Length: 182
Image 1: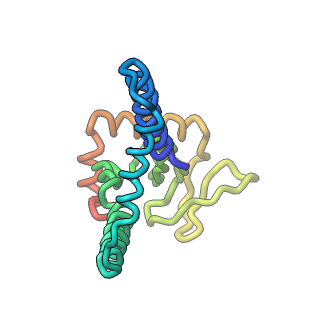
Image 2 (image 1 turned 30 degrees about the vertical axis):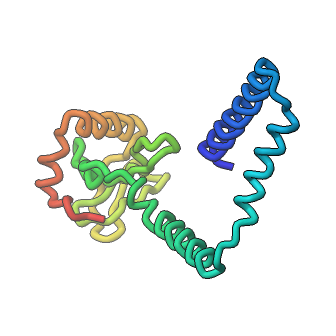
């Protein structure tokens, strides 16, 4: 059960309990016969439930309720989804002698994190690393690059975060025409 439903149930229960308890106290203070008051309330409730309503009105009410519920479910994501940040397409950058691509991942709090920082060749192909060599090599064009270290990717992550905070990613987006990347 969702948090809002639990809150709603607690609110309704509290209101009903407060009304009943305060009614009992006031009835006792005013010397009103509680049984007679309960009988009047019960007869009022029963008259509401025994009221004859044509079946077509009940069917129309149910259909309207179901259509409204369907509309709410259908368009809930439109209402609840905030627009993605402007920098979400900032996924490519030159750093030192490297070209890198990465992606963003949204955490449970709705914050974006940089993930999978990957070196690529000038031709756009992902570089491959051979543990026997101290270099990265493009499998497509054969271009070699110096060996990538964790220190470089850690530095790049901090640079990316700085670019986003300061707005310095905008010229990079324009340079690489990344505004329309998916």
